[in-house]
Length: 151
Image 1 (tube, rainbow, N blue to C red):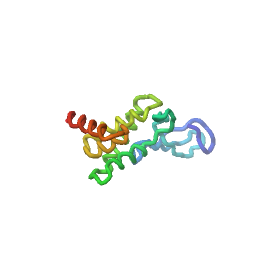
Image 2 (cartoon, rainbow, N blue to C red; image 1 turned 90 degrees about the vertical axis):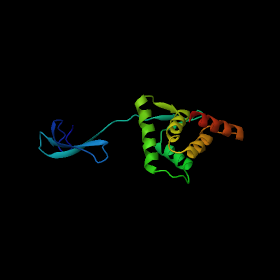
Image 3 (tube, rainbow, N blue to C red; image 1 turned 120 degrees about the vertical axis):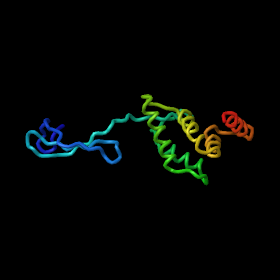
Image 4 (spheres, rainbow, N blue to C red; image 1 turned 120 degrees about the horizontal axis):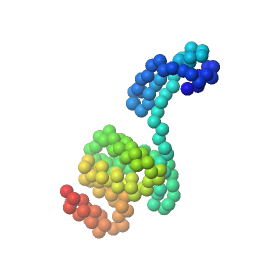
């Protein structure tokens, strides 16, 4: 690690602590040349994920879009926002762990549906109606029938 004071490359770690959120490590270092101390942070590098939309366009992954879609599905339903945040985090981590740099909106939508099905049946159907683009009442009824068969 390059010393910010003298530019020397040699330093030693004096103290290490995990950050409050557990996502990084704070390290106090001491330069072996000038003996001055400085702080560095170590974080896991995450590669950007590209979302491929239905029309073929691509955009950067945004977990807030998943969270907002779930909030709309759970409108006026009893749900702990922590559960929705946990689901969004699970989905993001699952996508990161696949090591694929591109993921389709269909894949993300399916992941959301699998997770919210256990939380609230009405929210599940609401989300499915948008995700699956129901065009008429028959497609809506078909989704409900499939849901009931799986129970």
